Image (cartoon, rainbow, N blue to C red; front, side, top):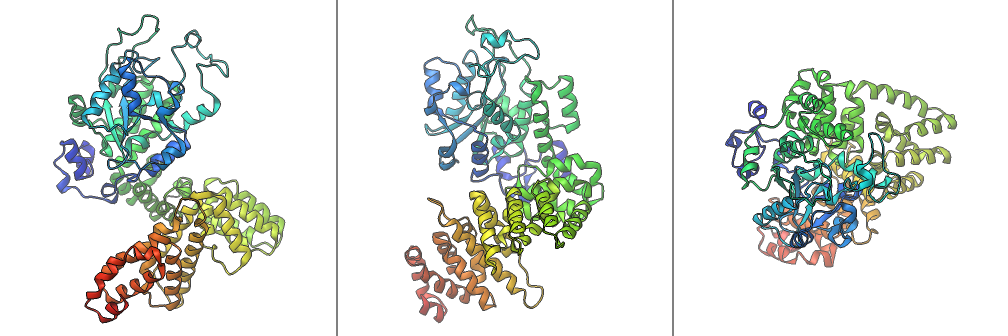
Length: 606
């Protein structure tokens, strides 16, 4: 596997190999979780990225109309609003081949001022989309039309000298919010070329722009596609995740057959020397960081082996970028490896994962962080302060945690314990610290959602609610992960499991008021229903109470157990399902099938 990785032939999954028709090694490849599970299968990561950074997606009908009228691509600010999909409209869409298809275009700009001043690239794109049977409802990501751009063709821009900028508010410029949007996009644009709901169309050809209008001052860009930093990074990411769609194009097949990956050091050297071209010098660090992240995921197996052999410090930079890999499984594996070998130099990078959007990564980071020396030392200092009777010391310690430097995030659970403090100002400081800690704070507050102490319970619920839907999802995911991982080690441990189930019930109740959305806890109904057959009656009751709060998804999880091999489990599922009323009635046919069950108690209950 390492040999295939180094030669650039290992695609990672049979589906991707069949798509590119280039690799015959998949039958012998060792498949890991990252290869088996595609990145962002439901498109939620991509949609969140676009909404948070104000990225627009373009309706394909607009591009066809533009080409029919012999127009050229306008910059984002000039695209008609009805041609763009943004914000909540984008979030509400279901993306993918079975729904609204999304095409991300990786192309070489033909001039410094405009990517396609003649219109030949637009024509080429539409031909490729037609080959891919692009429906009229499809969306396209095309950087010039979907991201905020400076109008470099404007006369005022073209007379600027080195170091000069357009005045604020100039129609050819971009506003400060648009600048922040663009900066956020550049830090994570690889998401658009890696998501499982995105088909990447690669247009590597360099076209002649001599037919551009005579009044348009243009500087032609003749660097080859793979000789451009952004293009090369986009292509390497798309190839790694198996997202290149237009493999019928000869140039694309040729690129897929080449090993275009290089070490980050070589990438940086070529970027500095100019062998890898980039039009905006200010983008160098952004594209370099994205390539480092890609390469860390590409060489994950080798890096994990190096960490296992005790040489993690030698690869600290690669580990830090691996902890930011796109796929959650890669981030989790790096966190686990760092914790197992106690690579303390990576403590800050591991603690930064405590606010990771994926709860599995946050749990792995939490388990790893407690093993690292800087975190242990910091925890000891915080614990000493929080044991003080002086309320001013306690409040100062909690305010320090609220500053949210990475290692402080590891103390979210310590802050959550202070929610029950008898001094109302200390409890308030604890609550504010948890809010500043974001998802790490939601994870810590989740355990207290069903506390017997009213002050602690209410404060924890306020923290989760204040963090919005993201806080609710984080709390529910953390509780569900702990329930799934729970193992009894000694008598009396069932109390912890019962408390986790009750906390998840409280999380479901918190999310029930959200208009048009099921509670986030309902996504974890399958984890809860397993506990309906627990040997402890209090756990069974807590599990039933939780699943009843999960609505239709809870009923569906129970219905899945009606085919369980254990008759007792089938009987428990029927008993629980009948309490759902109308939501349970949708599974009447599945219950009726049990009228011929081999078990008499199951038949009677059915």
